[in-house]
Image (cartoon, rainbow, N blue to C red; front, top):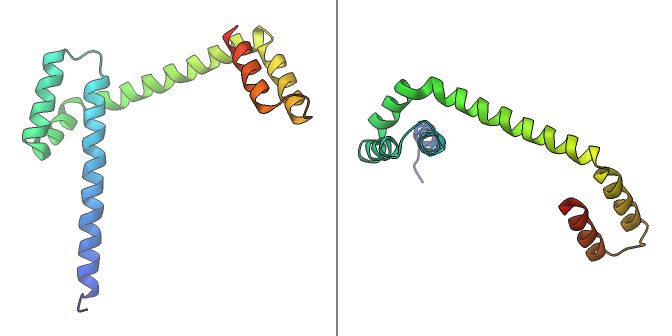
Length: 127
């Protein structure tokens, strides 16, 4: 087994770069398909460009729309956070949190089974 240390380093570096490339490629595809401002033709065009000329396509996409990728991702994160906060406000406001905590207490004391707990929880959350 004659594999010098420098070759191990180069092999590791190329594998790392390959994985990094795949992650970048998936981010570009994800951004293309999640962007509502692009038309269907534009999405198809970017997809074909990235599939036919992957390196050039990804780099051109990053140069043309890279700044917007971060802004769109931040907007999605803020929307998810606001949706979560609204869910918590409505859940706490209707007394569901108290009912759920009471159900957990009953389950922990052994007064109800896990199946009964799941059914009751589903009923409380559906209300």
